[in-house]
Length: 367
Image 1 (cartoon, helix red, strand yellow):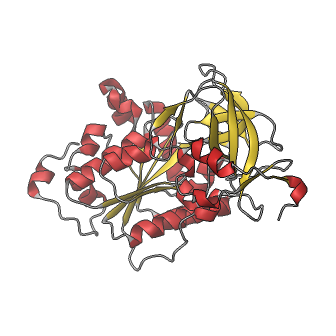
Image 2 (cartoon, rainbow, N blue to C red):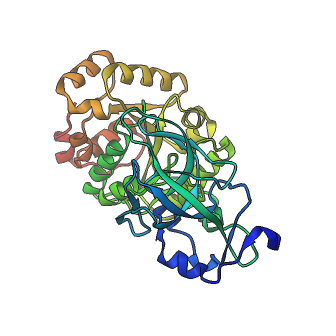
Image 3 (cartoon, rainbow, N blue to C red):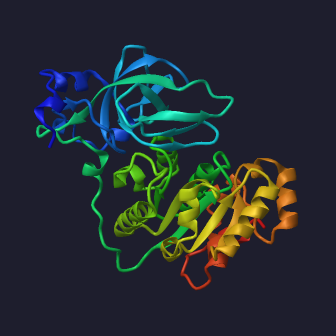
């Protein structure tokens, strides 16, 4: 518990929070627990912070709890959460040691201190923390307090497919969402989860719009992002989300693993026995044939069963031909994945699993 010297008692703190723009990353938080503000303390990952927008930069809008992207103006007060970010195409950022001015590094509501940025990015939006939000006892309100409960595995694990890729923007989410669309079009109930990444709503909405239900991510497990999270935390996220999906009674689970094979948390997860026990196969997303070939070879060395190649490269028929020349795997476009005929591939990939594939679906299978 913080001493009175470390508490800022604002009589109108509830009103200030009510009038602030509250970020999507805080969607599970019970705002009635927010009573006061703390200053002169070191922030931790997942701590909620009330901050003032000082200078608009790369992110001009904040994604709200309901998913609406609200325009921000200098002087606005926002409720975000501290977290690290790893995004080679955008920002590398870490949780600062103090409540000094820092940055909004993700539209979903992640506050951090920028280390580096991609050359095409503007400077991040500058924010000034007013105080870490605390409950009536002075304890910081943290996302972990509102995480879904950890549950034991269900009796029988549904067939589970993962999607990983060479890097950010390799087409992982489009691959996962297209696969979900095809499976649901065939009549399967699909549960989906994003295991790693930075808290934001775009990927979740894409999976929901493609037909998955339920859809979860690491924020539901209490983490604002997974960059610099120890592997024990990543394993907790994996087990928590997949166990919840299995208990929801879905026919199949689709998991997205963010970033690329060289990102430490992604590499640790893909090389772990924990993941191998949870998945039946993986579809790999790449931007071009060489990256696809190298990534598949890396995954094969890790004993990960790669079922097919997809991703951004499939937008180019020439790149698809290049990939097929060097890989003995199906190369599936988003149209292939989004068709109910994807069930025919499931029957080929998992001959011992009963999958009700119609003759019509099999006759339309695309090699």
